[in-house]
Amino acid sequence: MAGVFIETMNIDITPLDRWIVTRTASRFPGEPTTGITTQLEAYQLWMLKKTLTLAREKSPFYRNHLKGINLEDLRSVQDIRQLPFVFARDLADHGLQMLCVSQGEIARVTTLQTSGTTARPKRIFFTQHDMENTAEFFTRGMATLVKPGQRVMVLMPGPNFGSVGERVKTGLSQMGCSTLVNGFVDNPGSVVKKIAAFRADCIIGLPVQVLSLARSSRATAHGSSISTNRIKSVLLTGDYVPLSIIRAIKEIWHCPVFIHYGMTETGLGGGVECRAQRGCHLREADLFFEIIDENGYPLPLGQVGEVTVTTLTRTGMPLIRYRTGDRACFLEDLCPCGSRLKRLDRVRGRSVVRLGSQEIRLDEMDEAVFKLDNMVDFQVTLVEATVATAGIHLLNVEFWSIPDKVQGLERKIEQALYKIPAIRHLMDQGELTINSIFASNAKLFSRPIKRSIKQERIKKKINV
Image 1: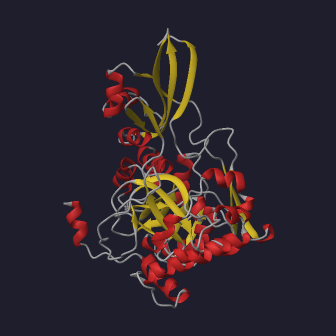
Image 2 (image 1 turned 30 degrees about the vertical axis):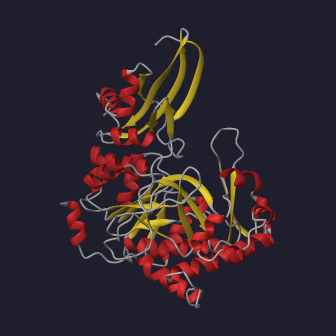
Image 3 (image 1 turned 90 degrees about the vertical axis):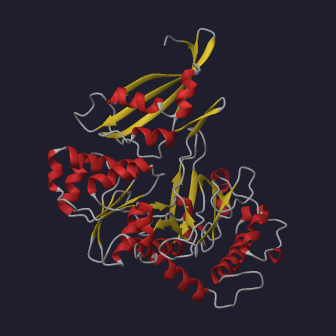
């Protein structure tokens, strides 16, 4: 019934639609060329060629990376598949060589740690112009969630120029909204009090952290200071979003929960859901997205693959066919809001460990464990151990709950994990053991990073 109800609702078209139409028409006044069916595709091809020309002329990295590429061979934006990919390691190894401006023209540098503790970090560079484009996207995209005069609490880093919190605040100020950039959640109880004191209408933050606020506001005395239906909307960003978290927040706060897709590499903003909540409408005037298979070939609508992005308006450090590592698909059907912009389905979690023929996936564990009342966060560690002369894998789960609501959760977590087919198969075959489930004594959200399955190896004999 819910699906039918959404289809028959009178849903306003995403505000990104008119914004992108206006931008593409004003910046590309020419007519679409032969074989190109839309003004947007013509604009994207035009901007792609401008980006390639800039990159080859100004960047030592791209001068070599794009050697032999003939721009005349690019007759449609789909011909982008002729170009080589850029990987995270390229950003780590050749970041400065990818610049197309002098370092004096860089207004913001963001350093990101790549996977592995010894790997060289990635550094992403932005000009003032790049940052202004991001704020403009937030102005347009946030119009779906909030109205002028409303109050928005941002649970992301700030207030330095170029931080996500500062860019969101700048974008919302152009809408006439009041914005408080709180930073990441460190203590859910104290942040709930801040929300009440600020009288926030909208909350923006990491999925797990916003879940902790919703459950804290319901379970403790200070929750009564947030009046019923106080929160009008929630935007989850910064990590993939489990459905179980969306459902829990909706149930507690009785408000729509939207998803934003973006990362530092996309210039923070990438796409956001409209009121239909059927996938993220993408920022197609600034970014060109592809979904590719494991061999790098484009996939049709509806098939899940790796998200790859090309920046079309970035002047400081363009990214051309950058492989993000995220997995998702483009949705096939027309959005109920009426927009024909591409929509990205909910991103799948990328933390996966393969054991034999089975995959242990963090996103599957999230769906199972976050359904449990009073759960706030958990960390999974997979240990490859030696028992006598045989190898076995041990699953350890450290979890955080609402204070004084720990009793019985260990057993419930174990039962929830065993219901996951891959885990049940491995346990029944004797290849995996749930070794330890315990309430953590560590500070909640002490390291607000993207969640993943930790892996350890113990070579000595142990007792299980």
